Length: 489
Image 1 (cartoon, rainbow, N blue to C red):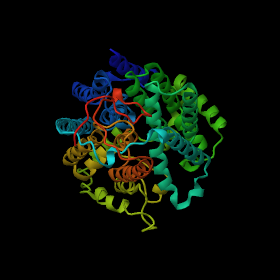
Image 2 (cartoon, helix red, strand yellow; image 1 turned 30 degrees about the vertical axis):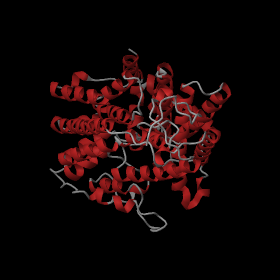
Image 3 (tube, rainbow, N blue to C red; image 1 turned 180 degrees about the vertical axis):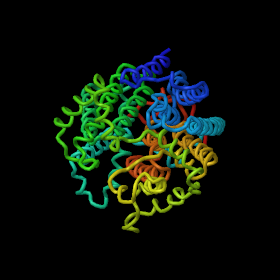
Image 4 (cartoon, helix red, strand yellow; image 1 turned 90 degrees about the vertical axis):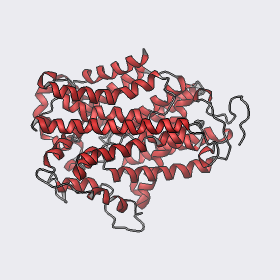
């Protein structure tokens, strides 16, 4: 029953924030496509909650995100999207269905194979953090993440010089890992009230300060990691808390374009803004949009370049252009992936990590090369796949993600939450939210973070074969497995 309330609460939240659904504008064949996407995006999360939230929901969150990025803007009947012929829109939305269906099938098949395979309980992934050092180590990781967020928001990251990207990757993995550990412990009732208060103050301040950059993604990642970890520890989702936090984020989303127009000179993010001044303007702008939306539509259109385009619009544009007006790119953006993996100290003039997105923007005439120095426009990986190979590319990328999303299950399976394998798997909870960037950009960022996370966790860990046991028996802070017969190796 709780899972039904979670799904209904999320749907009600979208309606509450003014995202009205214009069903009357759509034909039956479009509604059928809508229902297919709704089933493929919501059912995995419903099933995860119903089965007791016993696994890391990387796959479930990945599917759920495609509702807000692809289906919701379609159902809102955005004018930019509705300008395309219905055949183009249908091709775009059915390509999302094909992608999610293939991803789901491959993922489920691999999961069944993993469940049937014997659990290997030795190796580097089973190293655990000793009980005497573990809590202090994770507090250090959390504070380092908090410090980097303050430096970034204050515009002081220049002090890091050429090490900025490496420190950013380390900070990201440190923050996600520490947050997951502490909120899991909170759900299991293992944190005292002083530790709980300190945890909420640090995480809350980091999120609020981070929002002043004009980007909400990092805060959403933090909230999802916290809710998932707490839910896995307590075996229940904090529904009211989740809805309140998401409602606040959606409220900020309403006035985000006005905030960016006022505080971003030349459409580019600026660090070091006054937090009180930003929120005073932002909250007022969101309030005006919510209750006087029609009066602010012209102002909203004037700042449309500051908005991040919804991915179904970009996908429809790519479908309309290729191969009718432009030939397929035949893997050009995928061929750039090896370039992105070259360390910058070996190639100081290496192109930016957003090279694949920039290549697509120039190819489709959305931006010039000079424009890409100031504004980043995301296509999403389904549009990238279509631009390169059409339907075959969509099927191919779906199969790739089906395999990729099974990786965290392999890392976490049969291991306690304080093992390297399980903690590495938690990083997927943050990175699967990145569905806007090109595949190469995503893979480089994911790889750098994994390497940094492994080095850090290995330093704090020690080898210890861990017998298989359920997450419910795991206690952060304890290296002793629950009583059971010794396993022979």
